Image 1 (tube, rainbow, N blue to C red):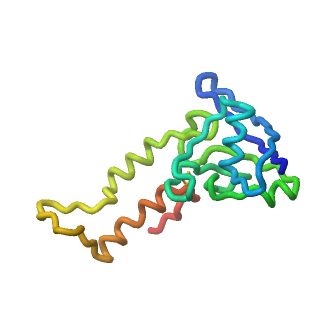
Image 2: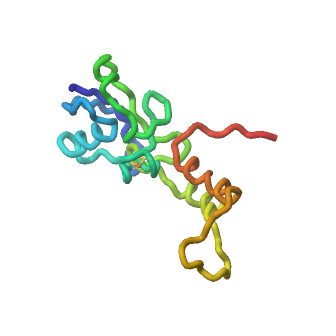
Image 3: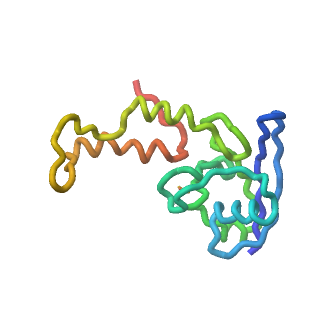
Length: 158
Ligand code: FES
């Protein structure tokens, strides 16, 4: 299938921001991340973005498509391409942009470290099998996965 993408590029050194359009040939099952890989491999090796697990877990490929937060490895392009739509791809909006679609994750990691979203066993002797977590302990760690996704800012409740 033929896929069109308009990608917001950003060069931190010059401060230049520009919208660049790409046309590429991709398999029908391609995701947005696959399409970005095709762009980088065959059309423009200077395009910068992040990826890791490729299976909707780590959140590394978080970005925006037409203003909505998406995981690039989850977003199928078939219907978009078939409709002839050329989506605008940009970096996540809640962190400073380093280059193109790559954002500075330092503020995120600072918050994660402050939250300590992991279980600490203290001085307990290790059991013979594994440490069992209570439901309450598991609930306290569930925010890690949510925090790693590119979602809209949470509403403040006072
Ligand atoms: S690469 Fe890990 S969520 Fe997409």
